[in-house]
Image (cartoon, rainbow, N blue to C red; front, side, top):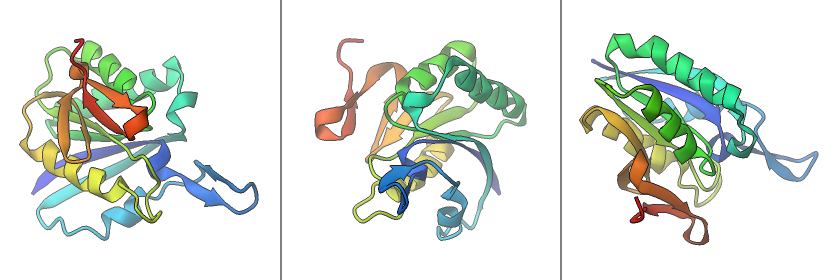
Length: 170
């Protein structure tokens, strides 16, 4: 059975609609509920909730917390998927890549443009693809979104298209 760690930091993938404020907010973790709906018979997914923040609110201390948790898990030799807000996902990925230059497993960052459970959401697709990519990719740090895999140093968010694209400038 393949073990995969899923670290959750929040972002749109975890947002819920608040009837009180009329806004979409990070309030409670919900990835586990969706993981249970997936058919993953030979995968041992270990879910760890680190924080539940919009990525625009993430600080250097938050990124250090992600790095430190990754450092604790790396000796086990299991791939790591990190759910993350899309606005600063690449920044966190580059931070991890610089902190772990000799990885022996893939680290995958993924998220969503609209929250899990919302009509037309890309969240479950991105989560599922990330879990598969974690089993197939060579060591390194990657962004997996919308059926594509990008090395973290070669990707950027294209806000107008609501997706990620190859960054040809790098």
